Figure 1 (cartoon, rainbow over the protein chains, first blue to last red):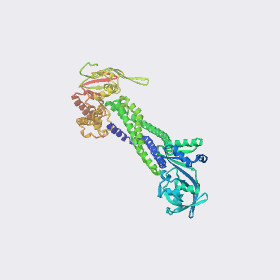
Figure 2 (tube, chains in turn red, purple):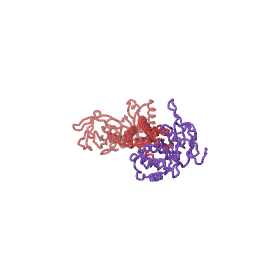
Figure 3 (tube, each protein chain N blue to C red):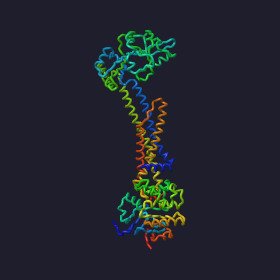
Figure 4 (spheres, rainbow over the protein chains, first blue to last red):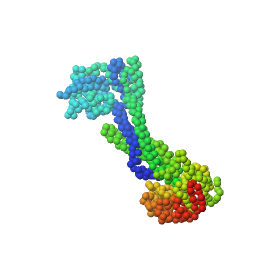
Length: 394
Length: 229
């Protein structure tokens, strides 16, 4: 076998240009497969990590339709009902969002003010850059303090000194002077646009803006990532029961989002694999073409080998090894080229590169298969040549 | 089994070969009867187009007759399948051609090793035996050369080494001196004599009267018919 491979290599070396050209189809085909999967996987890993960072145990109830969300009356009674009736719920976080005017010195603008419950930040993985989270006392007293997003910090405090400083915020004609106690890291979540948000406690919101508020968005935390889909369903059922309407709310767990995304990408991958398979097919036809030429040109050699006692099987195997080797060399070059190119593309896009080991293994095996499949007919043709005719040919 | 004579290596019985080219038929052999005995040197003489090469192809099992029997070592080749014929060519026959027919990409040593490869002999043993065969014909210093780096006479000696490396019962030489000058040609013929002295049967196909006469036994082919003096 090793000898067959060595001989095949010798035969390629006598026809370098042609061998390289015949490889090209497979090289391009395999490189395309590798690039598609490597770039696809890296993009997918990027999206997945974004989704995961939002907390896979979180189920978001978004106020798509204000009338409907109001009908649910997210107050303390409802909270108790959810905690009592919906299994696997760890926390129910109520939020209220309003926009307000923000002013500091001569810098003025508007921002989203989000009134949250104190554990919400930690549980939904909104990480602090510096400072501290809200504590129990802040909430109880309704203190005029705020945790702000990265963008707010850089816009209103260009000199960088933030903690303990104050922002003047006007909400519904009432003016507050909020002390900054913490600054968040840049947002990674897809549901929380925390960068441009000023967070206050719901205690503050209750005391200073609206007593007994009804939440306008709710984030429910499941007991684990695994139970979040069940929680999502149970909450939907709960909402339907309560309002008597189906599709009351836009409710989605991060887990379901991730699953939906994976479904979409696997469909896309299937499609792209189809395209890649076609390009490998074209590469295989290229190899077949070159093997037919090779058999025609080497009739004399085939005749000599037959005269020396090569059986049909010997001749067939010789040409099969050659086409499989051609294809495998093409496949290997394709894997290298594809990996390098996709590495470059992924780096330029700023994603994390992950080597598509499976795709590389599959294309390696597949290119061997292509070589054998498309080499079979020329090899059999060679094996069946009449030795007298073969010897007489030029 | 058709064992008429212990001493008989090859027997052609009423062998016909008819090539059809489109509508016309060419009768290359028209009922050849010939016995080749073990250990003899036989020359088959005839002008070009006489059918002598076709006759050689029949003896060497490169081709099958249209009609008639080719019996080798008591076995009728008509009953042998392709694999058996290949094994027969490999073990029992050694071919020497006018154009040498060495493989240009392989070294001298590799060329001589090739027939042993088709016997699935391990590479070390193949190398040993091929070297031995090349030493015997005086080309020990040309092992790694490519055929195109050798003279015609040297190439033909390599071809003879390749034909003898399997220790066949029969050497079939088709115009072995046809591409050589007369001096080199004679040394090749001397080599055949040496090989024959060890018991190998030799059949030389030629159109050259002079070469033909060097063999103790000579048959002539003309228009597909065989005659013996």
